[in-house]
Amino acid sequence: MTDEILLDAQNLVKHYGSVEALRGASFTARAGEVTALIGDNGAGKSTLIKCLSGAEQPDSGRILLDGKEITLDSPTTARRLGIETVYQDLAVAPELDPAANLFLGREIHRKGILGKLGMLDKAEMRRQAVREFQRLGVTLQSTDVPIGSLSGGQRQSVAVARSVVWASKVVFMDEPTAALGVVQRERVLDVIKKVRDQGIAVVLISHNMPEVLSVSDRVEVLRLGKRVARFDAEGTQLEDLVAAMTGALTQEEAA
Ligand SMILES: Nc1ncnc2c1ncn2[C@@H]1O[C@H](COP(=O)(O)OP(=O)(O)OP(=O)(O)O)[C@@H](O)[C@H]1O
Ligand SMILES: [Mg+2]
Image 1 (tube, rainbow, N blue to C red):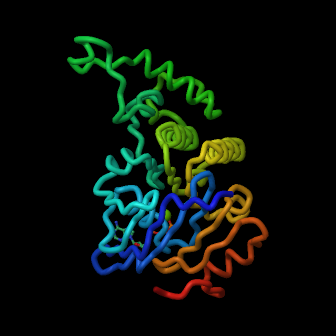
Image 2: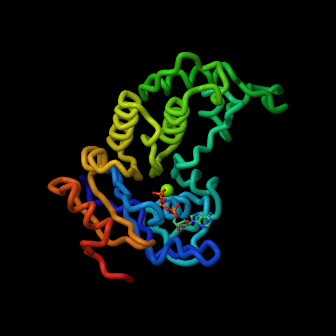
């Protein structure tokens, strides 16, 4: 574990109409670590991730990356800063094949005049995609079919691969293993560890507490739109997490 704080969110507030999804939520992630973000349904986890990946804008609060305050006005801005996200409601293009999905928004163009005319280098994208899928242990029978015809789990694996291929600082994964069978789940967890070992901050949302304790270095607990507790995973028991999520234990005072 390191002590380098890479991402530091302070007192984020987010309303959806009259619903206060975040009520001064704070969150910290470190480079080279997996930080789990846990909490009951509706605690605000997805909203927090959306605010930290540019998909939503907080009403107030500060976000620091590498100690510098940043404004994430769009997912594109976040990506430019090295922040990638696998959303709970998956954002893949169902009509495109896995290689095209991997390069979505970052297409490689053909060289010369054809490229200038917008012609894509599909062969090169396919070559690179096959290499990356192999490196990350994503097995697909075919990379030529539209992603809409793959199983939910395979689609999820492609979305996970896409985020880790492009991330240089932070990867957010909102329940990346929820739809997966045992084998695919293990693969995604292996990918998560590989990415962490490359020095990236991985943020994992999961309702699976044994999984949280086995894969993460630290755990942050959100309840009713606020961080209420944080743990080093080592030495923490399942019951500690449950107590924090349900409010039986409160470490942090309401800000
Ligand atoms: N787009 C939206 N419009 C209105 N309310 C929303 C919207 N998104 C989230 N909320 C509300 O904000 C609160 C937090 O929701 P959020 O999706 O962040 O929870 P979560 O912790 O991710 O839950 P889960 O574990 O079920 O995914 C909930 O009360 C939810 O109804
Ligand atoms: Mg959610």
